[in-house]
Length: 178
Image (tube, rainbow, N blue to C red):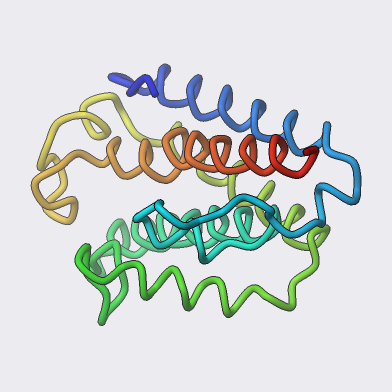
């Protein structure tokens, strides 16, 4: 995964991976799109391999991380200092938060989720445009980004997260067809 170093690249890589993700999903037939993952999560140490059961679960995960980023940026811009991960979560236990996201989204249909994630993706792309390169890529530019840059938060929640989803859904497509 290529990491963006400026605003133009961030938008470009976000859109590029978004388009790849939706091309992959749109190329799936309904059975595959809605089917349960058939790959074996054993031997894969990351919690997400056993958490997500289908394409909708992957999209729900991306959607919830979109909402985290939108909330983080909007609240901090308004002067309400909040951390990216909501209390009581930290980078040591955020897997538990992801499990809660999974549970929360089990009753949402694929189509409703698709509509919601398209909206949040566009909101984030628009939000990127409101920042300068310095605001996005100078570490500690904002006191609320900690030791990193705001661009890194966008990188993680958009192109890098889409890359993660692509890997998972490509494996689903490969194993579902066998």
